[in-house]
Length: 250
Ligand code: FPP
Image: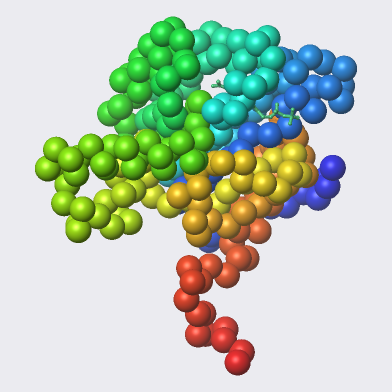
């Protein structure tokens, strides 16, 4: 692990408005120390709360986290049940955390294939935190980026069919409103564990995101690793398809 310790003065920095995290490496973190994969997810959950607390304290407004993909159902029943059980079993912890940090928690993903118990927990978390405005935590659960685009297209087609939407008015801004959640674009996407893939995560929202791939497993992604990610982000030259005339050399 790169143990370089850095000190950032956040008051002078432009932080991302929307940070997205692919939580990766819980399993490898656990296996490396002789623990079960479930122990890795348990530790991942604890670290997720730490990372969120730190991110919001640095004035990041939106955080999206990929906690369960539509493809994760291919894992063993034991592991799938464990992750589902983490969500339902940690309901009180999640609610206490959201209330103490004033976080609005929302979910992105398909409800199909989720148990009634999981769905009722999702609805309870969304309902109890819906009045918070300044900090948003988007939990991508049973989420797939392609599925999200297909689901949005279905809703759009229905609205065109029933006369609620004129096909000629459809543009990117309107399309975005049909996604699971109406969120600003992702500015920085972090995937821990060293893997350099998007794995079907927020395909639409990450169009112009900066990507950062720290080598540490998620349970080791601590405040210092977070600072390194933000420092790297501030060095990136974001042109959104245009040209940076101030730095143009030819
Ligand atoms: C991917 O890494 C991680 C997951 C599929 C699960 C992430 C889940 C949590 C952080 C806890 C769940 C929290 C809630 C609120 C439900 P991996 O474990 O597949 O890593 P590996 O590639 O090393 O196996």
